[in-house]
Picture 1 (cartoon, rainbow, N blue to C red):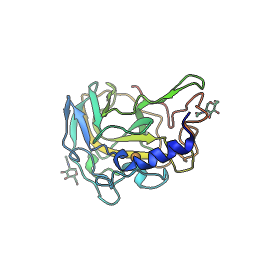
Picture 2: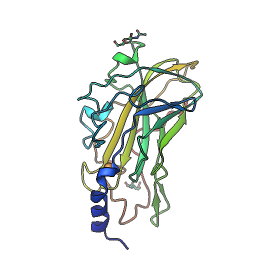
Picture 3: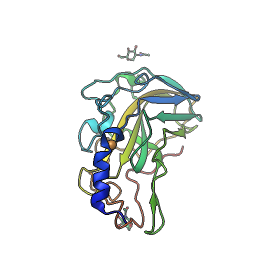
Picture 4: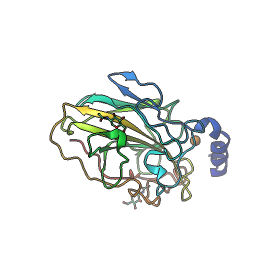
Amino acid sequence: MLSFVALALCSLVSHAQAHYTFPSLIVNGVTTPAWTNVRQTNNFNSQAPVLDVTSADFRCYDSATAGTASTIAVAAGSTLGIACDQTIYHPGVVNVYMAKAPTGNVSTFAGDGAVWFKVYQISAVTNGGTSITFPAQNVPSVSFTIPKSLPTGQYLVRMEALALHAATTFQGAQWYISCGQISVTGGGSGTPGPLVSIPGVYTGYEPGILLNIYYPIPANYTQPGPAVWKG
Ligand SMILES: *[C@@H]1O[C@H](CO)[C@@H](O)[C@H](O)[C@H]1NC(C)=O
Ligand SMILES: *[C@@H]1O[C@H](CO)[C@@H](O)[C@H](O)[C@H]1NC(C)=O
Ligand SMILES: [Cu+2]
């Protein structure tokens, strides 16, 4: 059995290549150019993660870049993808949140307040303590259906890939984040929720954020954040 020290060392050694960003959306099967419909993040060069879930950068990670983007139309009921610049290298889970621009123009929407709902997640698979696997690991993108009943309007779409290889200590979990801008067309009259603030949704002490995924193998895994709104 590999020791925890060996695993930790391995994750340090491989770290330069291990980081990633989410610079593109996939709309109607077409991957958008990097940082066109996604606000450019502070780590566009370093690819370094956010560690503090209470920092302002936990929302869209663009305090240094003041990232702007153009807004792309996506039909309600269609598939939206979010693409990584490589693959999601680390073991971990994914949450995608959305927030509707109250003014109708998402370009000027900061995402303040309890305005975010979860639209998609990829959790860990456990079986009572003999194995834990991460379906989001090593994939180049994630995709999900924009609910048909989501109201028409402009939205931020926030990708959150939580890497858990070093999550044994507080703020050891790594967050890879970016915010895209979409205009949902042909939507319905649903009421998305529960609504949360970001930052604010996590403390960093949740059982799915502060844990050792290696030993003992977790018997179960609790996905952080609210339930997914399915429309
Ligand atoms: C939305 O706001 C941006 C930034 O201020 C502006 O450039 C753009 O023209 C606005 N779009 C609309 C449709 O008003
Ligand atoms: C597993 O479930 C127990 C009981 O609900 C809970 O206390 C614990 O935090 C969970 N573990 C993880 C890693 O989510
Ligand atoms: Cu990394």
